[in-house]
Image 1 (spheres, one colour):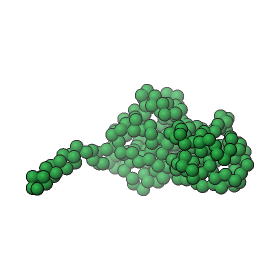
Image 2: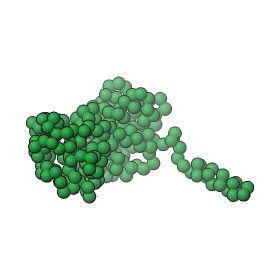
Image 3: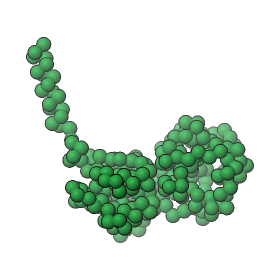
Length: 244
């Protein structure tokens, strides 16, 4: 028994020695819609995915982030003005789609079908990028009224909108093209007119704080904007800004 106990203790010690510590890992706060692509760009990183507005607030309150990757410029630019991050750069773009449950059982048919009213519609809340983009899209289409003629539930990030529709909690919802691609067996995407698309721009910035891994954060941001990073972003359905 004593020999077994010692062996178990030694094995546990070896496992602890081999595991990377949270203190040594690069801490990246990234928009939910980047969940699938970022680990492909760099795996040995501590990622915190969520709504960009929530991540911004966490950084303002002292969260130990080294790099911030936002789904729209507002949050990164706000941190820059506050002196909490270096100048943000645009590294990707995206588009919106209306998703419905596979087979469109409610027969919505198209984005204009929402005008019939009475559907369960899931959208991001106004403070999160997907919610802001959705409202801009509907305004351009002169369809803002669908937010009152349908039963609307508001979510704190795009992943929640996707899950609601994919698993039957909503009839339809607005997400990014990249998110819709992750659930091809559960949802169908309905076309959104190109002329009505808002300009969806992702921006990243190196966080300024005591103890930040500035060099590591800059290296990862450079990697995202490299030919390899851009290729991976494109593979996952993101658009690309012109090369700097």
